[in-house]
Image (cartoon, rainbow, N blue to C red):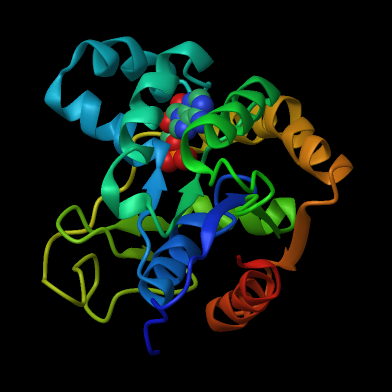
Length: 233
Ligand code: AMP
């Protein structure tokens, strides 16, 4: 699909429970509009791999499927959003996940990123990807990803051509540490308790576009592209 880079897309926030397909959709949006995908989960996993002080603090919390405390994330997110590639827009995948983070993001966007002469410009588009609980469980238990290029597969729904190997570069696929059943349940509960109120927060501002995440990947993206075209600045 052709890349669309000629206009400002603004911030796009992808909301939805773990396994809803935020990562997959974020990559497709990034490709189409030429804007970066910013996944706080990926950024945190990088910190864990590198053994930074943030990574050391986050590691155990992530392994339990719980949320890393808000204050630990703000520096990491602010630093990333200040990079030049975010100027035309960016996709937030996995952030904000608490009402505190949503409030912080609003302030950050207002003070740092928006055109100060026109503060209404580029209000985030919030896309909620809706998927049934049982579908989420099977997606998460079947999820595998390529450690080299990040391509996501599902052994039940979207298997690689050769068992356990990436179609694109042949790397051996990996299962995320937190995609184990007991951790998955914890992550879904955390989502309901802490992240659902974020959707309510944006909903009260009339900013949420609901898309049906049970449809095939390309149909979900079509719905999302439609929302972006409708609301983009
Ligand atoms: P994800 O890849 O988005 O599923 O995130 C993996 C894990 O990283 C989550 O289960 C949390 O432990 C942590 N994490 C990612 N994003 C956030 C966030 N916005 N707030 C708190 N913890 C987060």
